[in-house]
Image (cartoon, rainbow, N blue to C red; front, side):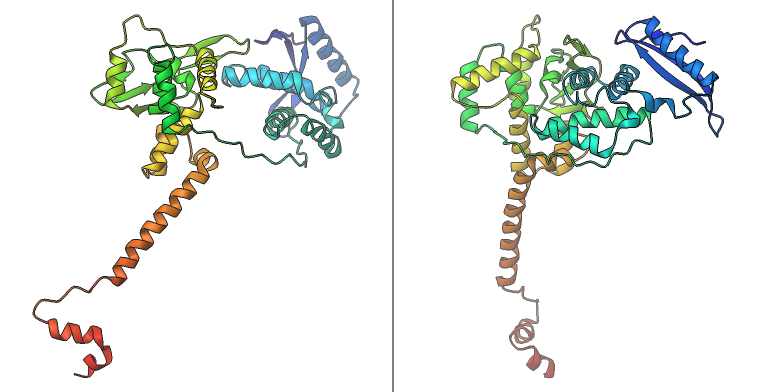
Length: 371
């Protein structure tokens, strides 16, 4: 008989061996409990049922949705980013509570859709989609036959408040010489995320010869809300070297040896207060949008922008900045059409030594051909 082992979350899990599938792969059924005894009792009860030939139905389908989510989070504790685990545990505790005690075998399209409808009345579409995504993958992991056919609320395109140069200049005047100045300058002039800025080491991460900031780490929150520096970035693509203006390189290299990076939480709250004093409803992350808009304004290639922002694909760029890209498309089209119009209206080049014939050919092709 197997025994339960304690998971990183503090819960206990007993994995009971129940046989092999048609391909000879060993099959285990998991039983979760708040204590070792509880998990072991559940596994023992299941073992007895198997021994008596009862409940032939696949055991994972007997898990509740909440148990499936707990098992998924416990299993992926060391794989998913700490911030993701923290957010998912929040979803587990607050969202879709109407089906968390429902057994997987009792989940129907109607049951799932009804709960989605309930949550859609009180949550933003993005929150509903994110929380449902967790439920779907957790249940499908435990019970691969789970393929619900449901409708999710349509996403609402958020308003993007990008500060103007005048607004940003005013903000910089207000925070000059304060702890906020450096992170705001880096966000606006290099497009780094707040966690990337907070994890920078000065001057180690500043390459003055190449004029770049080396992004190699990120500060993030763990599942308990504690901040720490990870020796890796948010994604593989986020590990990058970002071009930095010479004036900012000089400013960063001039920082005192004991300079300490600003905490992400203070960056957020401090910036909001500074912006509010000027009547601006913008977040620190809007400076990343500002930086992207600058790159678009100088017609930087799409892949170049993606690399600088640390994205994996252009999808985010197109989704978030699609309207800006459309504006640039129109400008480029107008400029191209103007050049083509000038090409048609421009006089043809003269051919050396054959001016008369060339002129006749342009003036009257039929006459020129008969000569």
